[in-house]
Length: 82
Image (cartoon, rainbow, N blue to C red; front, side, top):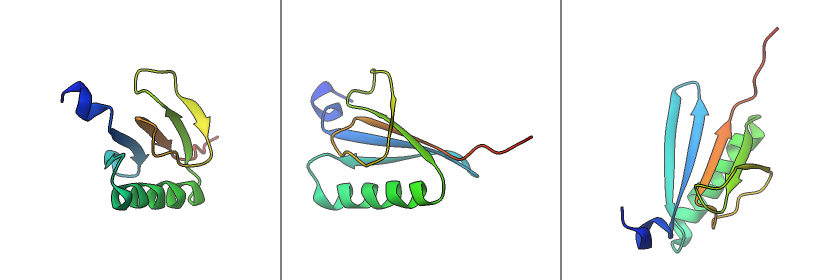
């Protein structure tokens, strides 16, 4: 992937019962952004914690709202155990 494409694409790494999956969106496509936002909101309601960074190489920080300009978002399910 060339640098120009990478700068306009976001990825959501989703950890869930299936393991790991990815959702990509074009940062200039309103439909893709809406789909990514819907997935983000649904996962937050299910108890996932979100971490994101404006640039994929940056340190991720906890986030509570979807920002379509972030290059990378990681969704981690609630961890339970004893």
